[in-house]
Amino acid sequence: MELINKLGAEVENLWRDRNYDETVFPEIAAAALKAANIPAQLSAWDVIAWALGETYLPDQRDPAGRFGDPPITIYNSPRFHIDVYFWLEGTTAIHQHAFGGAFQVLMGSSIHSWYEFERSESVNVFTELGTLRLKLCELLSVGDVQAIPPGKQYIHGLFHLDQPSATLIVRTHKSPMYLPQYAYYKPYLAIDPFFEDPNTTKKLQCVTAMIRARYEKTDEYIAGWLKTADFQTTFQILSTIRDYLQTTPVERLFNLSETATRREKLMEIVRERHGERANVFPAVFAYIDRQNEIVRRRGFVTDPEHRFFLALLLNVEGRDRIFSLVRERFPEKDPLDKVLDWIFDLGQTRVLGQDLPNALGVPDFDDTDLSILENLLQGRTDDETRSVIEREYGAGTVENFPGRLEKLRNNPIFQSLLQNY
Figure (tube, rainbow, N blue to C red):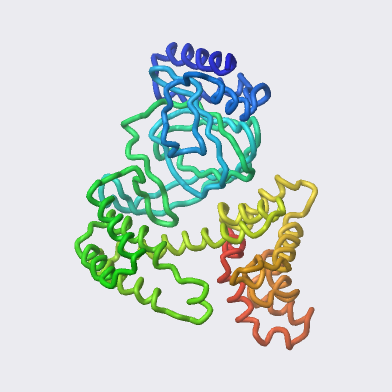
């Protein structure tokens, strides 16, 4: 690990010469990573071999492995440290950092998204409401470096396209002035995921035990808690119970609505308690449900290009942004043709043992549906698209044109594509 020790010494010397000014640390760390070019000389698996072969490791900054799978501290100094984070799954988490530094892709590739949050209301120190907007999106590959300014100036998300992936990071231990370290839930919520209240934690454990045991008074106790809970705790309660109150495939198949009714009754209590603020929760959870559904469908396909396409739909909003990244990944192909090819393939992919007609989740997906999508993605209006379809396929094909449009627009797969920004 002489390379890492040399990198750490270089950063230490440069930062000391700047009097340990935290505002300049990200640029120092980024420049040092670029100059050292570690990925050309050290593999992620070399780090694993080193960690297993050493009798004593540097003090581990995240021994519980809360961020990374696993995170390994490979260099420690009084003011900063160097970690390698391994990633075995993609992640859609959007967050900021209460530290400064820089990271470099050591193995794999990622979709990197950068956001801004316009706050409209501060509920408390740990919870804010506002609007989260995507500023830019890019593909990162081995050797690419990103500086990490602390706080809200760098709200971002990384979705790791390859498993495993690994990231080399040079970072300060913590910058208290940039606490809390918010996580962001599209489209409206910022909340501190590290806030812990032992009382709330224990009560949530009690609630999940009652739900799992199917105790007959479960909803009564949850309702009683929600009637007095603050906004932040309400989000924790709803986030916990919603996983247990999801409709099953059998319930969806037979249109059984008991679970949905239970959820709605609890939401009525939340609306009575929090008024207009309560409208944040359905919007946030609807977005999470959409993300989870795309993740689920991505788990059904193995083709790398199809998985890349679904990863784009998870992380990128807007046809033009998606096409730009497709062009970057496949410069020799027309992005529209590439996307339509992927959609056709997924529409023909059957999923055994699941309540889906195909990997798209679109029932009776046919050439007419694909042609409608092509016209919409070319920027045509609904009426213009209808006219084109009628000319190409005959008047009979547009009898249920509104139903076809609704079927496509309501599908989680196409919602990002059909946003034109």
